[in-house]
Structure formats: structure tokens, C-alpha cells
Length: 342
Image (cartoon, rainbow, N blue to C red; front, side, top):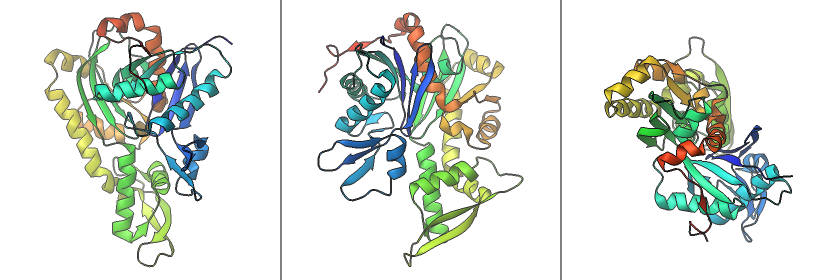
């Protein structure tokens, strides 16, 4: 088999890999279960994800890449190599890789991420900011001079940007996203009901009952965990509107940041955005009523592309096809010789 060029979304909660001409070929949780003595991974992806909170002695589960930052270099290399090999199989060719990073990542964080990808098997790497990838993945043409406002809400970060002709005019990154919502639900259940739940349970509650605006017809879910006082098993009924209320402080920070971004944007670009709509991407874009909340806050229409959680990876794939254009804005492939690796 001949080599592939890969587009990789290295998200906090999931890794998505696209191949030029084939689209998305892999989507797995970006978790690894590893032996704590040898630091060798035992499982990666779905099996490691479901093992979190259920680890046997001598095994630990972590996310090696959090908020676009490598938290464990060795495990990050092993995880990325595992998933790349799963896609590439037995090819002898090392691929070029376009990968996404949060907008405000530092040079050190970018060099480390490039080092991880090259150590995992990439021939050369180009890093592109997540909002730009999201826009490309949602169908925005890089050569289009009109302004586009993108809000990408993932698990670890919320990235916002005003994009015009293949580059970002204004950017903002908040470390408020899906994982923050999960933590807020855990805190709410502990403080309100004395119920201690795991992060996986909180995530399920968020997916099944979470919302950004109150529901006209409320829904109820059962939360199961441990009583904080007695330590015994406990379950409570929680409504969707309760979860909505506990998420409001985080959602208000996101809408406030979006408003502040507009204040720094040129009038002509604001006019362009007003004539179109805001692009809402990322896994959290599917939270019930989030598009309505942002639309009301900004007085603009909000569009959610099909399968918004895949937009970043699709955008990385699109960028591989448009590198001649992006090269004019300083985006280029870095090799092992150009980046100091471990």
C-alpha cells in the first residue's frame, strides 16, 4: 500500500483521523490505559475510555494530550503511533500530517506536539489552528475574502476566530468546554443531593439531559453514584432544566467572550458576518439549544454543520489540498531536522 497524507484532530476527548480522498477513517477516544511500572500502553481508545474509574491495581488511565498540550510525552507518542498504524497498516511510507492546535498555543507546546507526531511516524507536520480547520471542514473556501465567525467548542477548549481569506483576523481561546460542563454537573449533584458520581456518569447526564436553554417539555434522568455521607449506593432523579441551570455560568463566559471578540473586529468584517451566520462546530455544538443561546446573545443566525465533531479533522484534510494557498500565510510542513525532537 502506498503512503497516505493524514489530517489529525488531536482533541482532548477524541482523536479523529482523515485521509485525503477518503474522509474520516478513524474516530476514537484519546485515552490510554497503561502499566504504571513500565509505562507501556495496554489499551487505547474505547477500551481505555470505558476503563476510566474502573482501573485494576497497577493500571492507570489518562489523556496524554489535554487542551492541545502534551501532558505525557511517552504515552502521547505511543497513543498517536497506535492510531496512525491502525490507519496506515503496513505501509513503508511515512505520511505528511496536518494536525490541529488551539489558537493560543505557545511555540513550546507546538514544537512538542510536532515532536510527538514525528516520533509517532509522521514524515513532516504542519499545525493549523482549530477554528481555521473547523471553517475549512464546514465548507468555507480559504480564498474567500469575506469574514466568517467560527466558534469551536470541544472537550477541553472553546476556540473562536474571525476568519478572512485563509487567515484569522481575531482569535480567542477559553479553557471552558465539555469537560468543564461535566465537572459542573459533578459539583451540582454533590452540593445539591449529596451524591458523588464519576465523570463518565456526568458526561452521560450531559449528553442525555443537558441543555443550554430551558426545555418547554422537561425530561428526567436517573443519576447513580455514592452517598457522600454514608458511602452507600444512591440514586436520584435529575431534570434537564436543573442541568441547564448549573451550566449557565460556563455558558455565559462563552457568550461574553464571543461578544468581546466582535468589539475587536473591523466594521467591514462584522458586516460580512452579519450577512451570513456564525459557524458552531465541535462536539459540544450538539448540546440542546446551544445554537439558540448563541444566536440570541449575538443577534445573529447560527449554523451547525452536519456532524460538527468531525469538522476539525475534515478541515485538516482540506488543508492538505490547499497547502499552496496556506503557505502564503506562514503555514508549512516541519521535518525532524527543523524541529528539535526528543
